[in-house]
Length: 293
Ligand code: NDP
Image (cartoon, rainbow, N blue to C red; front, side, top):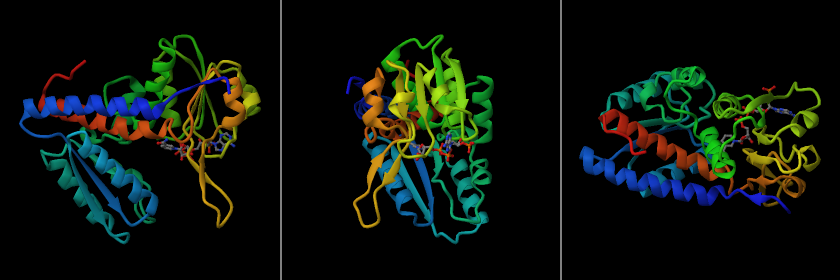
């Protein structure tokens, strides 16, 4: 391996510490804690784990955490009523509805019921629009975390060629926009892209958000490029212990890249840390207290 390892776990720990410091300052000024409410519908095991770790991290940063559980067969009206109640609750700065929702519930309709100024996941159509036109709003946590790691690794990214593989609303699209805002020349690749290896080979920055285990190979990567692997894929034969791999083949890519995120320990830990940061930003804004620089 010749690439430098981008240690997202350590960076995220630092960010959580900073959030903790400013959460305490917020409490001293506002006379209340910042708070995040998470709504979980159904009993999907992966979602349960995510919700539990979000709750623990929120409390560890000195903020209030509330968890609301609805049964898998909850009606849309019940779920929307819960969201409306949280919108009106002055103690709640951030609302997150854990996705995916059980079949029969419309993810986007539920998200769009959240007050955009409490939408700390940044998935509300108003926040997507704000990002698209360059206004302040909430930016989805995973791509914002990727940009933080890139800035920390590369500093000024002006003029660099960036290729984002994936165009989902939660990762690929906002990622491309954020990189354009950093003055990168951005190409968005997807399942219909012709000659993906050749497209990736142009890039100084590669962000892989595909959901295909180890799809991006080392010989696709331009020597010295910075590789951000967003993928989280569980692989292993039936009955075997599953292991986590990214969308990039780490063994070959790490021999060619200049810097690369591992999976696990790269982008993954950034997502929750940025969620805490967005919640605290919401709290400061809602109380009209100036944000620390
Ligand atoms: P989606 O399935 O919503 O989007 C995948 C994207 O990849 C689509 O745009 C699709 O193209 C594209 N794609 C699929 N197959 C190929 C292919 N063979 N060649 C080129 N492009 C392809 O996934 P998400 O964006 O939600 O997630 C992507 C990955 O990131 C997943 O592994 C997920 O687990 C992980 N993830 C990790 C997070 C974290 O915290 N680290 C958070 C969120 C996601 P098209 O549009 O043409 O269909």
